[in-house]
Length: 326
Image 1 (cartoon, rainbow, N blue to C red):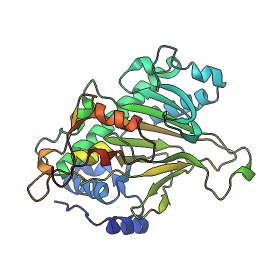
Image 2 (cartoon, rainbow, N blue to C red; image 1 turned 120 degrees about the vertical axis):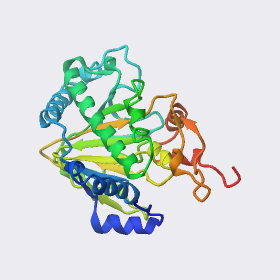
Image 3 (cartoon, helix red, strand yellow; image 1 turned 180 degrees about the horizontal axis):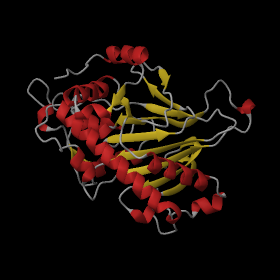
C-alpha cells in the first residue's frame, strides 16, 4: 500500500527534482500492482502525470486535431455559428473571455458537452464523438486503477460517475494562435489561460508540440511541462480530491500564451465529470476515526454553481471544507 505524502514541502521538492512522472499503461498486463502503486503515488505527490502506451488510436487523435485546426482557421463569424443558435451558453465558440466573472486569456476555444451531441459542430461531429469515446474509456480505466491502488472494495466507484449516461463531462479545444509580433512577448509572461485547478474528477489533456502548460508547486514556483503529442497528461480534479478525502490533490496549472511565430498551439482537453445530481463526498475507505472527513457532502451541481460564481483562480473547495467543530 502506498502511503500518502502529507508534507507539502516533500511534494514541492519532488516536483522540482523529478518533474512530471510518466506512467506506462502497458505495465497493467504483467505488473499491475506496480502500476497501481505508481499511479497513486503520482496523484499524491504531483496531482499530474504523463501517460504513454495509452491505447488511444493516433488516427482518432490526429483527426480531431486536424479538424479542430481547420475550424479555428475559419472567419470569426463562421466560428460563432459552429454549434448552432439553439445551443445554450457556455457551449460553443469563445474568444478571450473565460467564464462570466471577468477572467480573460490570450486564446480562442470551442467548448462542447461530451454526452450531448447537439453541442457538437456538425462539420466534425464524428471526430468529436470518436475522441470523446476513446478518452472517456481511458479516464475510466485510470480511475479503476486508482481505486485498485487505494484498496477500495468497489473498483468502479470512481469510474461509474463518468460512465453514467448523465455524466456532465466536457470536451474543450483551446487554440493559442502563433505570435504575430515578437516585440509583444515581454519577459515570457503573457498568460494564455490563467491559473486554476480543474473542478471535475479527472482531466485528460493532449496538446501538439508547442509548449505552454505550467504547473504550480505548493511553494508557488511555476514549472513548465514539456509537450508530448504522443502522450496524454492526466490531472487530478477538485472532485477527485474530495472523493479521496484529500489524499489526492488537484494541481494548480496555467497555460502561457504562444511564443512561436510559426505555429499555433492547440490543446484538446477532456474533463471527466459526474452527473449534476451526483453526491460528492469522501468514499468510505478514505475516512476513519484517525482520518475524519475533510469535506462537507455536496452535489456536483452545487459545486458547479460555486465555480460559476467565482473567479478562475479562487480556491472553491474552501467553501466545502468541514470546520473542526463539524
